[in-house]
Amino acid sequence: MVTVVVTLALIALLAGVRLVSLSVFATEGDVPPAASVSLPAGSELIAEEKECASGGCWAVLSVRPPNGTSPEDLATSLGMTPQARQRGTLWDPRTVNLSAEVDGELLIIRADYWSREATP
Image (cartoon, rainbow, N blue to C red; front, top):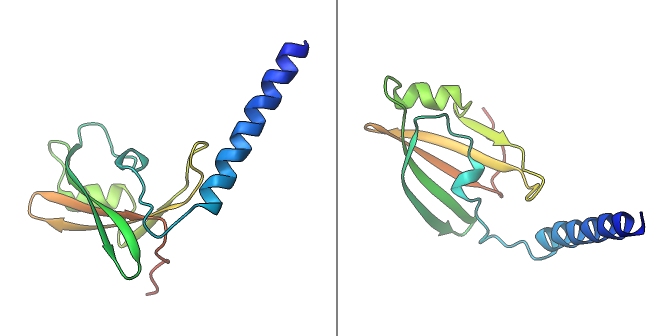
């Protein structure tokens, strides 16, 4: 019983340290990993780049939609018309801001932690 309590306390402590470090050491250079974007089965990540400007950095993901799906349909199914916010995970609870634009046969997704919701 003592081993279980000590183990759970240690896990809680490590999780707390992780959450505090994500907040304290966050910079405008942080970008969400491609895995943080929930793409449907059959989608193919063609390229992943990091871009930065005066407002911070963001990930640019070039995605080929599944067969039979247009890039516009993929953006709509992901709720990225024009912008979406995706909750973080237990490991990284920061909200991911997503926007998308069509480039030929690809959907270009921009993912970041810093942008604000677009106003209509």
